[in-house]
Amino acid sequence: MASVFDDLVGQEHIVEILKGAVAASRTGIDTQEMTHAWVFTGPPGSGRSSAAVAFAQALICPNNGCATCNDCRAAATSGHPDVEIIRTEGLSIKVEEVRELLTRVAWAPSMGGWRVVVMEDADRLTESAANALLKAIEEPGTRTVWLLCAPTLHDVLPTIRSRCRHLQLRTPSLAAVTDVLINRDQIAPAMADFAARVSQGHIGRAKYLALNENVRSNRARIMQLPLQLNSLAAAFAAAQTLVDLATTEANSASDERDEKEIEKLQEAYGKGATGRGMATGGSKAVKELEKEQKSRSTRMVRDSIDGALLDIA
Image 1 (tube, rainbow, N blue to C red):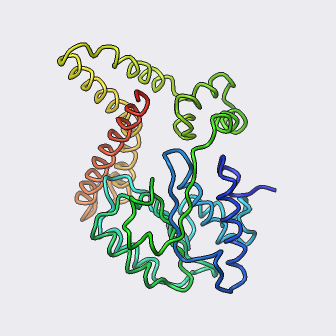
Image 2: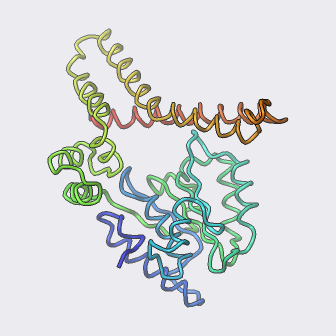
Image 3: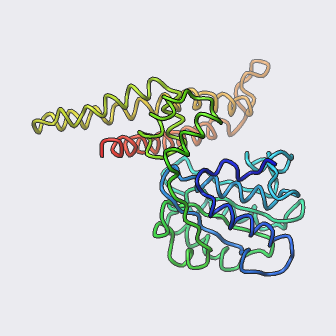
């Protein structure tokens, strides 16, 4: 039987705990298995965000996370009215964003059960944003569950983590990642094995490498950079090459997306309808979106550089 937990590779101990919590949540009795705040930690690629989203799906699913019902499908894409998934694409989560979130989740669940909030990058909360979130976790709604994700427990404000149940995910084995790439993504065994090894167990990175020749080519160039460090000038040149390759990779992933987002927003404000321009407020909204896109691009470049440095190390 299918389950929302099926894609959590190498995390059997976590799946067992989460299934126990889902079962306990159905009883209506306060137990140690189920609590209102959780923090998922683990290295990049361990699946901490996937685990949190799967838990959210299971909590609102009438069949404990069947992965096939409308509730499960809607929750996975932020389309369920009782599930909020905060995916940060900027450099930080600001206090204004948290306050808006708290306003949205203050209401009781609209479809019964639970109101669940998944925050994928709790480590990116600003100090003021973390303090605003702390108050909500200290005084939770009776049917609200907070699921926070961060690389390590120390990346979360001490006063927040002390009020959460901690689950630590581990890096999947290379064999497990290879098996997923072959059987789930239909990637050739040799390529799957290569991608699993060079991605160091990061499933998303492994799939991205296996399916994109340009990414593999850029990685090959990056791996040659240490061999060129025979002078200070060469070191500066290598650093610039690394930044250029990271920027190119980030831009290739975002340019088309940025353009579509702008077009969609302009259409929402009436641009192009019967030859008219945008309605009042449209230009300001576009500028705000462009600002968000720039912040997202900066983060993508930094993430790409981080990945390259891990490869070299």
